[in-house]
Length: 212
Image (cartoon, rainbow, N blue to C red):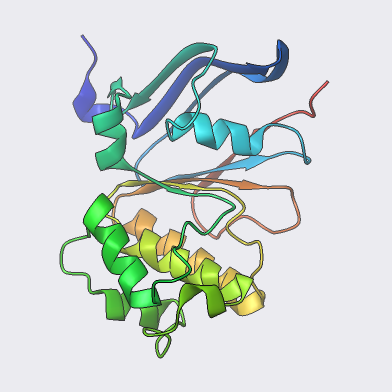
């Protein structure tokens, strides 16, 4: 019987994915514990985004197993335990910033005691509550998605290139958010192509090779 009380927040065993019968990654074995960050590095085309999409349940692995909190990662468990930040902001352009975040909190839940306005203050987007999302720059949209991550009650963050489209202050913001999330007992798996340093937290590396 699996000891879920002491299990890592995320574990993968023999995880592999192929596209058109060509291997993209794997088999991979790794785990991410509470209070820890796993930095996935690799060049463009090495499978970093695909790996996070598999872990988030957006793609089906060809082989292997994903465990969340020691249990098979069924859709309902992923919905409660995993928050995913991808390349696209997942914002509705016709809705305001406040309306977008209120809608997303309705879908994914909200961390206890957290207010949308406070999350916007933390991410440097205070004052943009009534701005339609379509009017925001790429960096501002990224900050709104970071506010959504901050509001999420999920203990496991999957961050795909979270530093993209951010200036130095934005990069420092991501690092502060990750550090605070880990101090609260969460865990983070994030990808980078190597252009940015790892966040200043307990971090391990997972290197992916280029596709054949």
